Length: 479
Ligand code: BGP
Image 1 (tube, rainbow, N blue to C red):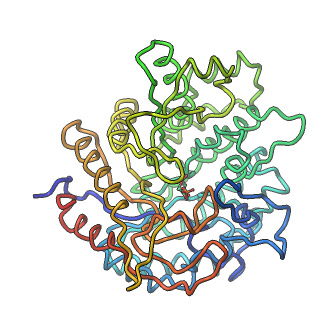
Image 2 (cartoon, rainbow, N blue to C red):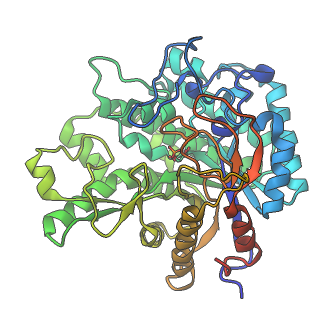
């Protein structure tokens, strides 16, 4: 018995910079992540001025998908993937970002990759920008602080829409466009928008300025894409971390609600084509000066998305009392200063494991937007142990994923949520985004590569590989 609707898409998700490697191959320019060093437990990644020879940059080689894609696609096909979400590295196509002509070798790589996928009955699902802005634009123009970057992005979008119009149907504009709401962490503004906050600048104003430009860029790209191929389905993509009140104390409930606006602002504009009232009030209240020009409202209205893709890894919990005691500022940073939820366990990286939260997220988002949803990231980042015989028994990952799929099934069949598909994160081990480590693994395919860049890059199947294949084969009924 099939548990999911016919045509439901089972797949896997990646980002170019986390698995391709080949950072300077075939004319690719450096991107914002190419100057990010590796982190480790408790040691944040560093953004360096240029590439320094005595430092290790894990994304430079990543897991070398760029040179191995044919073999990897074979494995994805064996796993039964029906779609593969990845991004087109912007700086492969426009190495500096402001050229008048694209880099043909970069375009050819994605032509070859998409052909290979299609030949194996795997549909490419493409994110235009997944933390891969050309470094030059970030350094010379201040990334999305500047309105000129909108034009650079739209040109890039138009180029790839035109080139792959017969190969790709599902697109997303910006990956996790809303995670820069946590602007107190420089990594999010840098990777999301190519932006650094300079002395004397108001970080929140900088964040909303970059955000406004990205929302315009997204809307213009949607409109352009529809002109190029009306069959395109172009979505927004957000990170969704539901925020629970710690108690039934009305202040806790209201606090959670207010925090949730930080998650909702970007998708509200993507889907409704206009700024929500609560944000306009915030601008007014705090005297924020955001360069919204005449005509921008029309651009936003004309570029609303067809569906909403989102990542779901965890929930978080807030307590109004804790905030009051710490004199915490609820508008400083988008992600709340969460407190422990006694009903939920966490991963080794402190990410709350909450499958019911996925059903809750699907319901909240569907109630709010009434458009199809796509779970384009979900997964369990963990340390894997290779046994003496080379096998990896990743039962905790299987347990995590099956519990989330079960809740997703309830959202579809019981709650009536319209869901396009499910692409768990990093079905093959890749570089972790937040930590830059290889130690934090999501894959069902193991890659022999360590935190320092040692290893043979050999691929091998974990226990979850066969498990996921049978989930797909049975359309979600064998978990
Ligand atoms: C999301 C990003 C991904 C990604 C994932 C897991 O925020 O879209 O790029 O890597 O989180 O995060 P991490 O790799 O840090 O565990």
